[in-house]
Image (cartoon, rainbow, N blue to C red; front, side, top):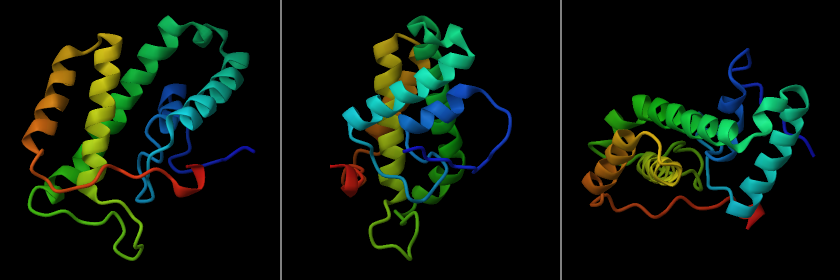
Length: 153
């Protein structure tokens, strides 16, 4: 099966698309967590397909830093429109859908994901520390962890 999402279609780095597999639906209200095995399998399939056109991306020393940077971009982008409205109160990403995640749950998930990725890759230590600081500063937010997509668990 191939999923095609034309949101923000255009010419941009491959990694911004691929990071959707580490941070599902980075710009959508319907974001939940992909189980690790599913995300890894999807990323491998996407990478294999992309490497047919761009063989240099097959090297882990190219792919992994590109993915970490794209994850950072999507995380900071989400903060640009979610953080200010999350400081006062937690709100659903879509109040018309009962199972929609909250903005605070999404932010904390993004911060954790980015921090763990940067620490594992020993990259951008100041940004990793900023993510740790955000997580610590919002530890009092009473939000459950971002749930996984029910159909994939």
